[in-house]
Image (cartoon, rainbow, N blue to C red; front, side, top):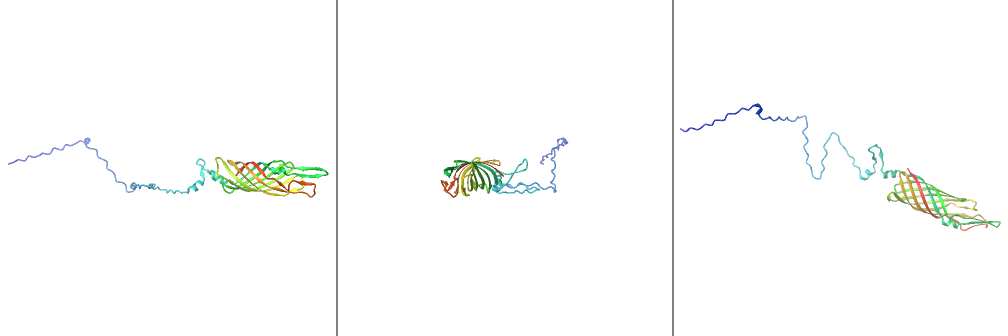
Length: 264
């Protein structure tokens, strides 16, 4: 008879509580009242990710590039609307100022009036250079075109001349801090010559010139060269004792002028 050996299971050793492994904390299930965390959205190449939704909706106003440049900037420190230089120049439509001109009318020197009374001859003539002082004003339609008017008076010895000028002025692009311009105008003239026999009719003429201006704040300084064409008809009194070298006094010539004006 064959005996089968029996295997005896080893006795289980009891461990003390200090030797037992630490138990992992039981994770609590998420509360049904709290929404589950947002799942990350797939990022599509070439498309910007959408911003996370919040309680407040944000709207953005998209302005065209040209409209945004013309919009008034807000000063962050004071919160006051500050206009850009182009907007400020556009709003300054009116100006008023003064102009002084050194006028050279070479043809006027050749005009001579003579009168013979009782064998005594008297003559009247003009000097070549003249100084004119003007009060000028203008209205600007846009940054390029404006209309300018000036009332001008010249004081000489026994000679009084008034001129009224009005016409357009065209400003070109700025060159640094300077702005070149061209102008043209019609001229209405009135001349009075004391102690001269006879008188002169009111005259119409024209004027054109080129100049350059410099603007600082609301003040504008200008320097221009111009030419004026104007002639005054002379009305000789009846009688052979009065003679004149010509039937017209030609007051045409060149002028160099300086201006100072205030824009508002």
